[in-house]
Image 1 (cartoon, rainbow, N blue to C red):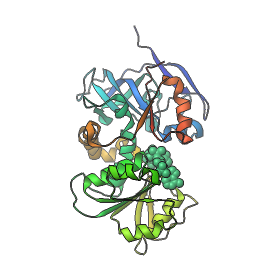
Image 2: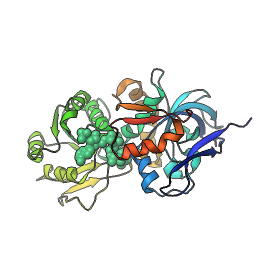
Image 3: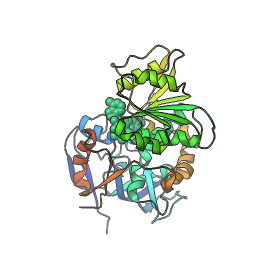
Image 4: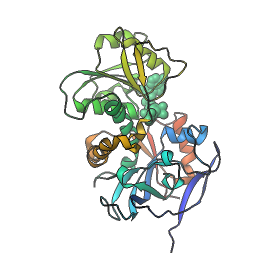
Length: 336
Ligand SMILES: NC(=O)c1ccc[n+]([C@@H]2O[C@H](COP(=O)([O-])OP(=O)(O)OC[C@H]3O[C@@H](n4cnc5c(N)ncnc54)[C@H](OP(=O)(O)O)[C@@H]3O)[C@@H](O)[C@H]2O)c1
């Protein structure tokens, strides 16, 4: 009997999601089919759903990262077997094909962007961690040139807005490399950010934030995880008089007033492993770093399991965009 698949479809730009049947796609040579057990709602997915933030062909299935059980393997796949528990970053927004969309019961992934889930790690944690962790590590390591874990003994890093998902992983990665971390966050999150590895945490709303951060510097690496205008402008001042560069989760905007000697480095950091030029990083990521991180190497962003499966994605997206949850929202598409 053919496998029955179902998805939360977006039929036209910015329209409400509809749960409808979807094709079960057999895998191409280097592909795998995953019986999807968990996916996290990322701000990116939510923005594409409600704002058509990235151009995709409609009707379409959104979502680009899933955790589940391998159902079927392509003929050239060697690293996995049917029944393996895996986490996969799928090329939904690069190849723009619905078979890769995470918001369905059976998802197609590629062998090169898939990792085994360690035995004691839940599907929910495995689904929630990689996107934000990859964003932080790609920004710091690939774009700013920070080295790999346990390779450094001195130096300082500034992480602006360290209490969220990306910021929290940026703190942990930089600390694991060996840097001293200065961070900003809301005061109620200071203890949490210290536990992640920051030695100093300051309130980003403090009127004296620039002078305080300057006193604690200089910094070898700087990143803003919120990517907002105020943070970028403050960083530009902190970097004076010599200037420098910093990574930002959001692109340069009109509200930013950066000094001429300061450059903002922006990319879709979360898609780093989909790019051919990052082949060696990608191999390290899925074979080494990510499995270690999932096995307890990082403290996960707190997550919330949302019941209701595919039918509840839209509500979860609104909660993410409107800031109604400080946790990563994770759903299981096999649930009704
Ligand atoms: N470029 C990429 O590849 C990429 C990838 C992933 C995410 N992103 C973007 O990165 C951003 C963060 O994503 P996330 O998943 O880490 O979100 P998140 O977990 O919701 O964290 C957002 C954090 O931002 C802080 N914040 C809110 N307003 C702020 C402000 N005005 N100034 C400074 N900090 C503020 C909050 O910290 P407090 O509670 O301490 O105030 C919150 O913890 C989003 O805009 C997302 O779209 C980009």
